[in-house]
Length: 187
Image 1 (cartoon, rainbow, N blue to C red):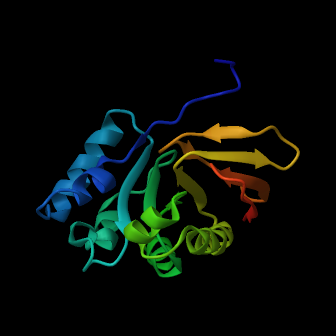
Image 2 (image 1 turned 135 degrees about the vertical axis):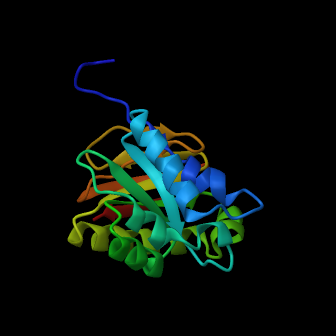
């Protein structure tokens, strides 16, 4: 790997792992899980999701989890959001990185998030701009088989579940396994 490149490991267990559990863990247990990951050297942790607690009761304590975590230089607490309301909760709770997933399959995106892919992208554009104003970093996970072409750059194939960070001000065109091109500007 060239010296100017690096790999960030993002621990998603406190959000992705725990929201799939049948029971609801106490806030203190979630915070201990996160603290242990940080003690092991992880610097980016997806700590919770700011979603409807009736749909995902395991994440109902999102604000309490963040409030229990000390702010540390170089540590990013990522809050997953699906819409502007979730972003506002995450920003108010002190998330220093906002994450969102968009599924390339419109059908799956509707099942998972309750809206179509285009609606999720529109929400993401709004959230990315708001996050920039709030000085929070933004990360978008594109689920599916997607090709992204940054303006002035070469096409990049993004496989299922691959994490992509779009810097503020970036413009790109993306294509989802069919001849439909969309152009979006992030931040």
